[in-house]
Image 1 (cartoon, rainbow, N blue to C red):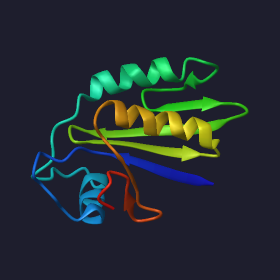
Image 2: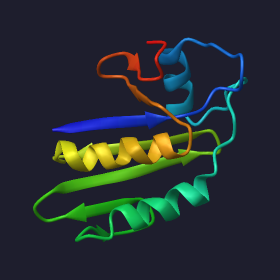
Image 3: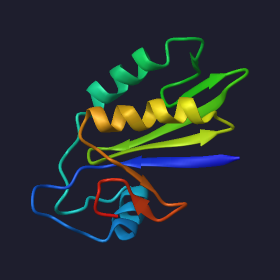
Length: 118
């Protein structure tokens, strides 16, 4: 089963339709009203968080024989993780990573952005 976790950050005072933002970012497009993310720092933190038995296969793919795999897709405004067969606690580490950088999770499967505003 696959699941994608999506992270971006709105500029102060900006409110946009989350699903539209998600679709545009997933297409690699720039969205007015979003901040640029520190992608390099986020990727370095990811390496720290998954140093416990996860193997980085290439620039964007990580796997663990018993715990699944994930792929990273980024743009200057977007950090997306496509998860394959992963455990909830491992996906929570990714959600915590987004939160560390001020980016709440958007779950397109449920149509919810977990920023307190729905």
